[in-house]
Image (cartoon, rainbow, N blue to C red; front, side, top):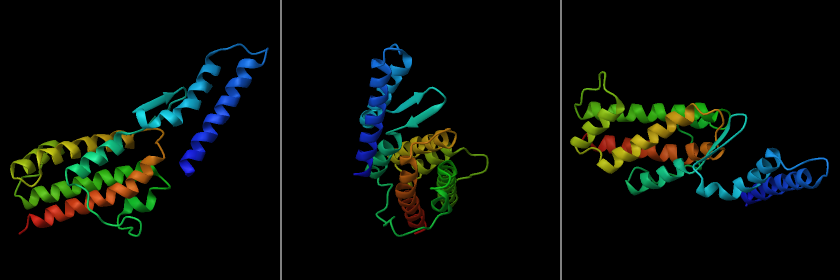
Length: 195
């Protein structure tokens, strides 16, 4: 409900500014008026957009993390832990203050778990990139090809998000909800490889 109010507020404010800008006789229709109308539409188009970049370096990223989460769920990479009550990882503690750093922390935790899995499978991890490690884990049947694909995409998204100037506020929510479930699932998979 809160998101819908925000959408309405942004659209209404931008529409009013655009109308004033258009209908005040001293002001001609220009790029500012068009930009304000586009801003009014962005909240409603968000589910269909991958990204929107506005003048001044504002970039909003939509959908990628959510799409990858659905794929991760289909690939069996998300545990069913209750993320509402648990704060187990350092990235969870800083997610609201520094979302970029939280995403970097999640990326580091993912890499650590994949390297631990590789060590348990007697895969040499020295000087190995994550892509190769994941392919080797798939050869040893510790990860499926679908899981390797999802993890590769997720790591690329996390890398890109870490370097973004402006993050979609939903990235913080995603980090808090999906990150722990993904890590718990990898821990379970790794522990299962011991037996």
